[in-house]
Length: 394
Ligand code: PLP
Image 1 (spheres, protein in one colour):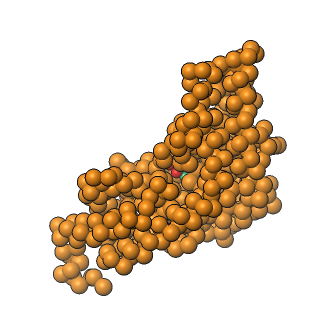
Image 2 (cartoon, rainbow, N blue to C red):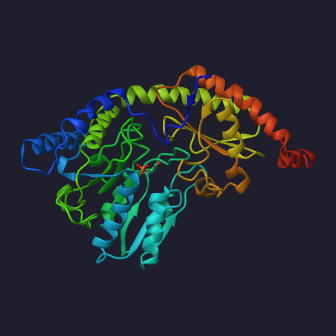
Image 3 (tube, rainbow, N blue to C red):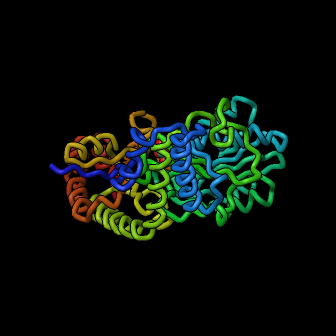
């Protein structure tokens, strides 16, 4: 059985081109990028090139790119770094109730340290309510952090409008663009944000590296002290092969963005149309069009998402319930609950995320499998039996 991977929002394979670019930096060009000699200079040259590649992809200066270990670290740094360094402005932070745990838990940590956190709700389609965000702004608001694209339901947020509100009120604007990178254009100047988090492994780059864009002039606390790396803001010997891999991956992702987005959008549409037509009692989560090209989040009523995942896995199809980070926990997805749905609906949610290595034939096979799996699981579902007897089915 050929395995089918529909979990590109969780992670992606390192592309051959990226792997090839990284390879020499493990055993041949292994110098410490901070050493003065020729070994060090060769390594530093590679890191400088990678930094330029990331900067070019985001339309900023290389000096505004700081390498991190990934999206989680970038989010942690963006929020704590801006909060601590701008305490004179105030201790109020605004975020949304559908952020990734890397943002929500960092805010919760700050909450325990005397910062006040306001979580702005989203509408039924998962778009942040701008009026509520505007109303939440106070003179002591120092930071607003709203993600560019949601990792579970794929909704795209009005980051440019949020950044404009921030600018008018002298507030630092951060966006978690981990899922948006390579999927939608990301131009930090056009967006007007101060801070933007990205990660390599979502775009066919290696795991364990990401970056934080810090607009020149933004007041930030250092993340890791004890080294001169990343202009003393994040000390520690630079991981040269990973930086090289990230640089290569982001250059390719941005170069091929339009072509790739068109390809995966067609797969997504084929999948959504097929599932909505062929499988009864399902709903698509998130906005119908303002969503990531590769995301289809579907709630299957009366059954558990985990059971669907397990059955699909047996049929050779890999996807995810909610986000990869929260699957494994029995908690219902905070994102689906934030849309106003019940725990039962949240528990019946599955995220399918496509990539350019997927095909229309795989989509059709998955829809066929879903038809039988869902029918079989519903036959065993007390919730479905109850709904049938109480004539709750429409
Ligand atoms: N933010 C979002 C929106 C994500 O989807 C993820 C990963 O799934 C992260 C942050 C964390 O990124 P990383 O896995 O690079 O730590």
